[in-house]
Length: 166
Image 1 (cartoon, rainbow, N blue to C red):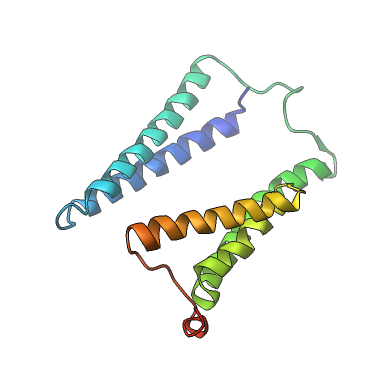
Image 2: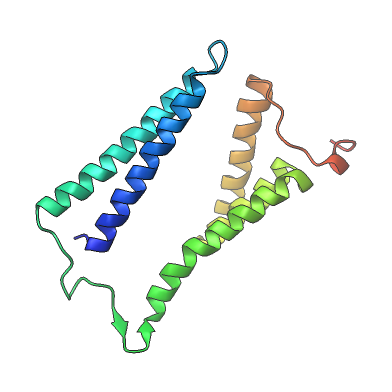
């Protein structure tokens, strides 16, 4: 069941996705050659996701689904419980970690930043097996290297101090 607040959130996020898709489609139309095709196709997918999100929120409203007292988030007189506080903190930590990742890419390069970022995210999300960290991080970096650097010849960011080594 969806609360009224979640429905409004779905409507707002769906609207933002549609606006982003419209902007990308409009901007991609000015690209030369066939450069417009991929961003336009992805923008249509993003826009379809926005429409689906809005449709889901509208259908949920029409069915009259609202959160009852038993399904509402638990709060006490002093505020949210520990579980709710952790649930609110997790997205903020992931956003801050992503900002740090983006800031590290020019300094240490894409590959090293990814090898640090992926295990950190997996640890925050609760993975406890070290081999999952290793397989996921190394597999992702190898996949991106083969696809972008080898197949499409698109160089990925490297640290200036590492360019003499690698």
